[in-house]
Image (cartoon, rainbow, N blue to C red):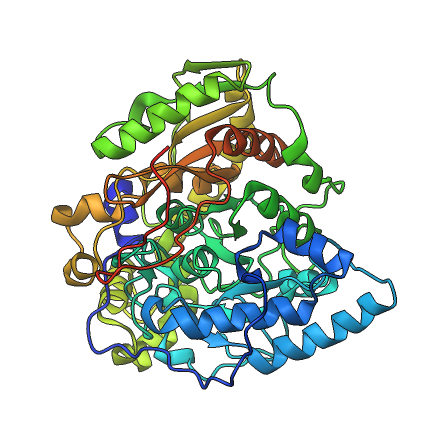
Length: 522
């Protein structure tokens, strides 16, 4: 099996069997006067809290009200953390009353992908296997966000164990796209992307081992960042593909993503992949000039086989970037030799070998098929003895590490790369659920434009760059060398301002569930 086939295996199609729609109990949340605070950005909400015109309680109730209104159809949230969030809000409002504000996130509600540990709510991984699992501790990044004053308002839906780019394999049912509920949100962090787009939270966290933050960000019309490998601790997230995984922020603007990233970063001595480096002021990055940045456009292979509407939107965006950056030119980017083979198998099966052997029927159909395929690729069917593949796996890890150390040199002559986030528009939920793994569904599950950045550990920012004729969002990726997040944020914010995307969101439905009031394509 070659790398291309393995990408499809890691991104396999929708789960079969009967799924359960989340149906949380709903205490009444009163309306707030004069508009809906749930539609504010993080930066706007932070300003309102400091000015005393809104409280953390106001923001939390607004998000809970939006969850009550939209989640029954979109299915972005598995667990609303109602009591916990309101208690957090009350405590933070008491602090604000004394003049203490922890950070720009003080009192701002966010959601977490439900494979990120929370000690006060279940972390299900969207699987029947873990539906009642409550971790002993918060994940490292959750601890950091709480210290910064963020409120955890909900746990977001995802593909079961984060192994689908359409988010259709969840035990709790597929996540629908807030822009058009007939379509998927993308995955595997589809609940996080959809919740942000629908105003159920001001920002959210996802995990990304092959595009799982960037794909739903592109398809839901929001901003998502896969940070440099090691910049954000993965402690308390997963199980996933450890050598590729990164936790990343999703929000409605580049500025908001920068605010989240600033709170998330920091060395974790308990995470062997965590990198200790000086603190950086990411919050200031979106305001920095981008006029000196040199943009490279790697046409091959990232522009091959594009949906025509994706191609048109990205080409228009490149013309806009040419009015912002110092230069925009096509480049022949040299990635070098990338690892081939079953690098996913030992990572995934290190967790799943026992539960898969004991309770295979507890997995959704497509997830079960993936685990079976990966198990068969190793010698021992139950993954219990050393495999002859272990040496290959170690060699792959070393190859990736070496590539991460040397890839920066390939950026000589330009500062960032720009390319389409995905090659296709979001498929319909019906198509995603019906499709099975195989060459015939390649357009639905292509992660070729995203997974490369996990393989080499580079940061990649997806920003909205247009709408299809049917009003489906399209995303553009800005990527750079390791630890170049500030440059990506600067260029992304400059593009966002120039293109006029900032503030666009799905704001209503007609009788066919198509989002209206969304504005024209860029």
